[in-house]
Image (cartoon, rainbow, N blue to C red):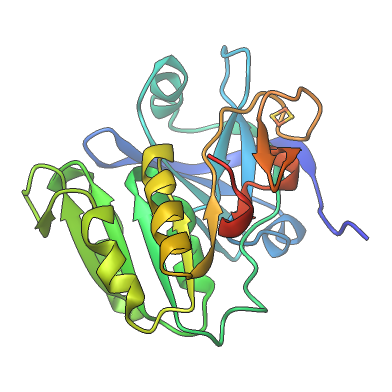
Length: 253
Ligand code: FES
């Protein structure tokens, strides 16, 4: 039985503030039943006033009656959103299927985030009972988010930046191959598609299982428009409804 709960209504904005250059946290006051039904890897469709299509946003955090999204200003929609400070905003969600925690949380796992993929991975890191290592790749030091909070939670963070301004210089996937061989059963990943492709190759080569959260463009978020179709295990699936989290062994990128 599908236990997914969907809600399409307006919620009060608690704040919408810039965390660092071009990165914002949007915090919403939501009903308790909505908060309780959110799990890591799920997302909401956020309707930005004046923008035709809603945009998908991964759940970044849930505390009590508040729901947080982390986003980067990358175009007209997010630019308009970043200027809204108060009032209400329309949401649909929580949507999609998230990370499978129950089956895997007693195994040895690592988390991997690329860019704003940290939003989904952060919520996962908060909800996992056991801490481990989180690999986090970004372009430059200014793109790093949540580090203090993750360290306070007990996660060991390994950072790479493409420009070498912090941590290892290069892509996080450049050295992940060796790291994953060390006693890793499962890897949970969220980030841009080129990074996911590389991790799929590595995980298959060294036979590590895991889950990837895909960042596809979405128009409806509920499986109606077919705009987020992807091949999974030889079959066409909808990223929004059947994912966005899929098993590494099933994804064809
Ligand atoms: Fe419409 Fe997935 S976004 S089917």
